[in-house]
Amino acid sequence: MNERLNLFYLANSRYGGWVTFTAHLKHGLGDGARIFRITKTDERKDRDFGYGVRYRNITHETAVRMKGPKLIVAADKNFRGTQIELIKQGAWLVIHDPTELRNPEFRDIVDERRTIILGKKAKEYLPQASYIPHPYKPVNSVNIVDDDWKKRYSHCVSVSRLDFDKNSHWLFEANRVLPEPRRILIRGAENRMYTRTKLMPKYPEYLQDSKRPKDDRQVFPREFSWAVNFLSTARYMTDFSLISGDGGRTQYTFMEAWDAGTIVLLHSGWILPDDDMVNDVIGMRQNCISISNWETLASFLQKDLPLGEVDKIRNNGKEKLKQHDCIKIGQQYLEVIGV
Image (cartoon, rainbow, N blue to C red; front, side, top):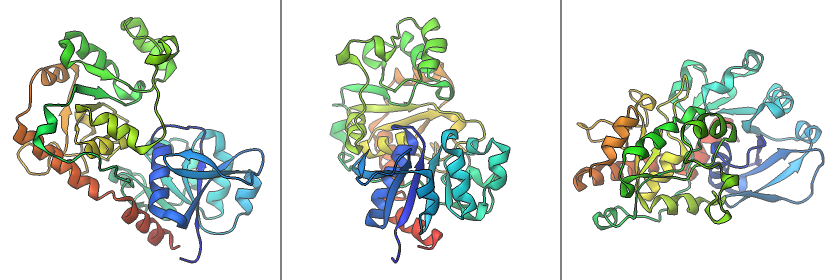
C-alpha cells in the first residue's frame, strides 16, 4: 500500500449508524486509513472518535488541498459545500441509503462510478455504483449454546432510536397487552421532536430522557462491546425501521444482535427478495423473524420458540455476520478505490 486512504466524516452526529460504520471500516483498514472531520481550525492532535478509533479536526480549506485518495464516509446538509467540493475533485462517496439522493442538485453531481452503496436496493438508483456490504468488527462474546437461551433475563429489548421511521409506537402498544415478564425493554435513544409530538400525547407513561432520574437515563458508551453485551441479556431484539425506497440490507442493530446470539425481529416490509435479511421458515437461511404490525408482535412475544428453531436462526445470523468481516470488507474498499 503506497498511500493512506483519507476518510471524511462530514456530519455532526456522534452516535448512530454513520458513526458505527465509520469506526468498523477504520478497524478494517487499520493503519491504512485516517479519519478527518471539518471544523473552523486545523488541529495538531487526534481526538477520540469512539469505538476504539481516533480522528483529527481540519478546516474545509485543508481538506480540499489534501493529497491522496479520499472517501466521504458520511455527510449531512451542514457540510454540503465540503462534500460537493471533494466530489468534484474525484473523492469517492459512500451512500448509506437512497434517501441521501433526494436533493436533485446533489444527485446531479454524484459520480456513480466513484460511489459505494451498502444495500443492493440502491442499485436501482445508482446502477454503476459498487456494492460492498457493511463492515463489522465482531465482539464474539457469545457462543451459540442451548443453555444460555432460557437463562437470559430480558425477554425482548429495543435499542433502536425512537423516531418517525422506526414505528416506535408498536413497542408501546404491545407492552400495554403483554404481561410484565414479556414486555419489551425500551432502551433506544430518542428523537425529542418525535417523542414530544407523537409518543407522549398517546403514551403518557413515557418520560423523555431529561425528565427521568439520572440513574435511569439512557447512556450509550461509544464502544463495540457495550451494545453486544447488553443484547446478550435478551432473547429477542426489535428494530421496526421502514425507510421509503430502502430495505433488505443489514443494519448495525441486526449485526450486533447476531453477534450477541439474540434473535432479530424486524418489520416485514424491510425484507426483500434475494437480499440479506431472510425470513424463509421453510428454507435453511432464516436469520430473522418478520413482524407485520404491533398485534403480531404482541402475539409472538406471548409464546416461546422451540429451541431447535432458535438455534437455527441464531446460527444463521452468526454465519451471515462472517460475510461482513471488517478486514475483508476493508480490503474490498482498497481494491475498488485503487489504493
